[in-house]
Length: 165
Image (cartoon, rainbow, N blue to C red; front, top):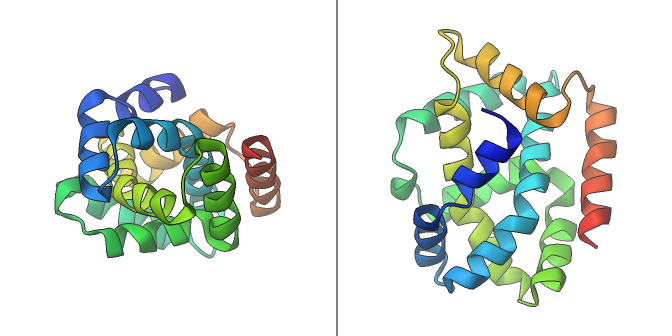
């Protein structure tokens, strides 16, 4: 799966409807936020996958969410996932996305929390390797230019956030 295929799958009508319903926003709002936020969130996933301090727990979460129905994950858990993916950039990302989408950062936070379990589920299910961690790492590396250390990943996150602004 390449980045275009993953983004298309994440932005499918079914997924947009699901995220909008869970977050309590319109489908148009959910689609607008996700179109902007997904590259930032996927970059955050890459950062988690490439940081020696977070790699193991990130792959454990991806593997767990691959087995779950994303609909069964509540917004509180989704918010925790967003916090891990965006780290210290979470508030800045939500504010920048909110400004771009013309909505409140609170609603952006709800949309991201509703989408985060779906992202992990799709990452986990898009790897056909028997070694899911290696398969997910390969997918993220292919999607986001991989081979980055945490400093490069942090720099890419800053670039992604700057482009949102």
